[in-house]
Image (cartoon, rainbow, N blue to C red; front, top):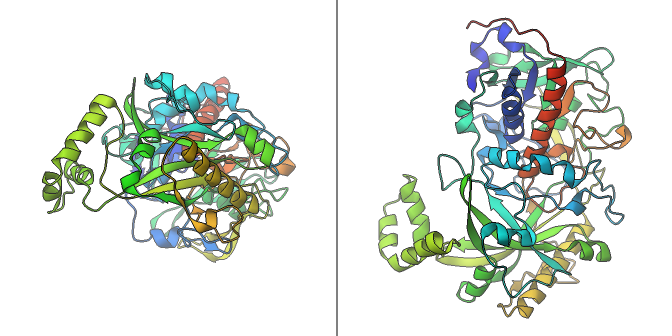
Length: 543
């Protein structure tokens, strides 16, 4: 895929069939899929090839709601590859229940069901650097991995097994996939990316029902125009509603905001430590709920074993979805961390000494990884029990426009993130169930954080997890959301949204795999429509 700078191209290069705004996993998936059909795609990325010194000014937010882990920054990255620049690679699939209208979860329910995404799962997995797109959660994992399920099964009336898959970068087996460095390797002759191209306004016809073009600002503040037949907004859960709201010259209140839905229902995942285990006692628990290596047609991939609340319990006790897992905290003198630094070319002077001092742990780890296909044992400073919980959709949890502006004059997003009692109650209940299951299975008793104990009213040690979603939610009724079941903005015939901002609910799981599956599905929708009614080729471009 050709990557160019906005400053170096002529105006003819700013006309295309499909314009994609944002070069993160969602945007690049759409571009790659459509280019594979020979359609002309132009991707606009606000940043460059690396995070620059002006990132702080461009990525600032005005936060007036619940505290965030990075209070003054939006989740996402202004750089080629978008949020994949800093993501951790952890992927899972939403449960069937997450798509349902749950009477005990206000404003829940998607206009599609889980089955609508399954046909796109394997293509999504290939984009994400995963071995499998389906069939790896709950008890499906054991036959997939060629292993016997543990004899000491979980009591699935309350907690069920859950597995996450870790993305793998095609060029670095020690890292998850980073889209940015691989853009030039994508075979897509009809797709191009322009970096340092900040979209500042979406221009529509007089009715607001059709997008004619977008304004894009580069270095020096020069404003240019990109024309396309179809536009896909893939800028993330904060920047996407911000751009829609800021595009208000022709349409009062912003694009797609006739019913004041843009920016509402902001959700994230609240995540944190709810209990701990002493490393000396945690061996059996780590073996039971640890890591597994599974072969696939795309290589060897790591899976993480944890647990999640059963659907029956959620219904019975009016809880939201929640997952728990064990997180190893490696010691400063862990030899395997030294090995990784050496192999990455980032060795410190003491790494050789650390490795030589613990060759036994290294040999045991190599055997476990290569022969047993399980996780590597580390020298640990601690073992944490972490929880990640779904958020109940709340119309007052939202993104608005601030009176402050960024360096190109765009209003900053004002983020009013709200958290709720249902989430806290869920986390405390899930923690108590985990403690009970550990006792039943004969595993060591976790030391529960006081605020996570049943009946506590102290604030839980949970923060946002940089998974903003819901701000342009999918709905059948335009009065209750921003996009329809095909991710097209209600009332606008050629504007679509890709990303977690279309999620009506967010489940307990990291959003990327679902985001990419939706992007693949959207690509098929656009491909069918555009190929059915082709348009003339764009003029030739010389620059």
